[in-house]
Length: 462
Image (tube, rainbow, N blue to C red):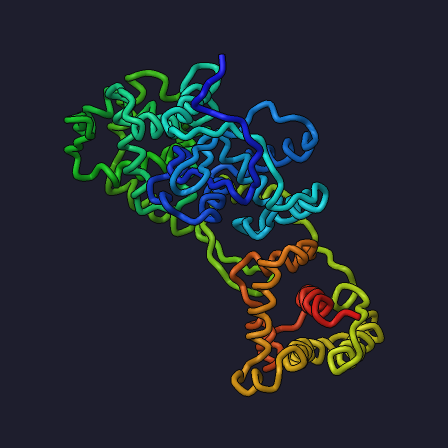
């Protein structure tokens, strides 16, 4: 029997929008830009997104077993079901939607392999009535045997849909909201509300001993909590669950807290003053400094379990072609080409002589800034140059935008894509080179020169 309330259509990727009210997204992501929504999906479940991308690319020529469910709303075509899939398609057609540089190698390879663009069409079930579309979401994520949502996402969906919930589900929903508002690093919040920890967390926090210990109850579908120190104690519990032990090194997991008595004993053993002090000490010690490819120093919160994992792995050796600008360039005759040839000759003549190389690296560093300045002065007209004291900065800013917006620059190297996607400006390093206020390393010079090489090739190639 035909359902008159829906139709099957092929729709271009560019015309489909992610559903910002998807239960995977917290409420603060409502009305956020598409790139932010995609970024959240990767932040929450990076490995699952990569697995999905692998599946899509490996089975690209097969007919999909599931169609996207799309609501034809007043604000466009909203994907109610299949947001992770359409996010992958969008990234494969536009690498600049990637939230960070972490997965750029993988997606750059797949994007070149599949060669799809924003006009690629996917088969969709289209509904005019939002409620009709949500029936498919209900079926997949609420019915037994179908759901691939985490429990926190399922509870979110039920609450937003106004579906009747029991007391424990209401407690979990409101505790989730409180957790997301805690003054804790995002990594911790994502970890406790993610797979592997949520079951233990709910086992403690939604239990009868917890209800008595914190003095909470549900009134008019809202959680009311008596304990004024609830949030501080909640932070302690979260940290101990993630680390799988309390501050006395007793094991904390679903097996050690398997009975009401176990949970009651655990809660009573929390010493607010002592444990909160230890928590803050641990948090402080978990902040690590790092420097990226472009010399930008940042601080990153590293969970102890991640830190131990990193230490157990051998650090990979970063290798880059031993060629200035990444390769031999074929540029138009002019000042840019003359300077390029001189720099290339200097490097090739000295790269195997350690003593000589130490002397020429500062010259090459200063020349990298110079060649950008020369390129900018050849790129812009005399009238434009009169209005700009630092044309090379304007030039780089414009180039970065061109690389983002123009599909013909899709096949850039991973290193250049990393620069384009990130908010990092290597102009600062170039300035340090020009003023001789930075330590010169061969690897850094090669990395920066490779990006500059692609810029020069795009605009001065024969």
